[in-house]
Image (cartoon, rainbow, N blue to C red; front, top):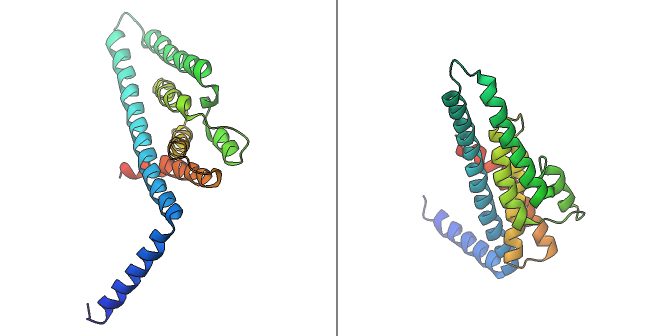
Length: 187
């Protein structure tokens, strides 16, 4: 690098850092967004790998307990029904808002029409989603990942007592982290 370019780069970097860190609320919001994106992506990746693990476990159980005298469907249907029924029960018993894909719930939360109850939605959506998707149901993984990510965003904004407007931004950061990061981890 020529000697004249380095001092210019250092000057602009210092100017950026001074401007960035003088607005403490903006800096906190950015760092919290990064943290939420990583945490939501990590949770969604674990969710994705858990679905694969439970699906393989279900298939292993079906293969183990179905032999030549017992038809395959006689093991597969009750096992898958049990898993789906358990997912339905825990969802409707503990967090009905965790039912379905979760995207309409988050859209409502972004518009301020629905509350985000992360304390009960995160565990119910995670384990209920694992059971439902692991049972062989033809559902997508993106909806639950979006809802999990958004709930992580609300959790962090509640922990750090962020104002309502910044809380919406952190909710969106959780949505983005939950949706995009797990797909990048498969590369």
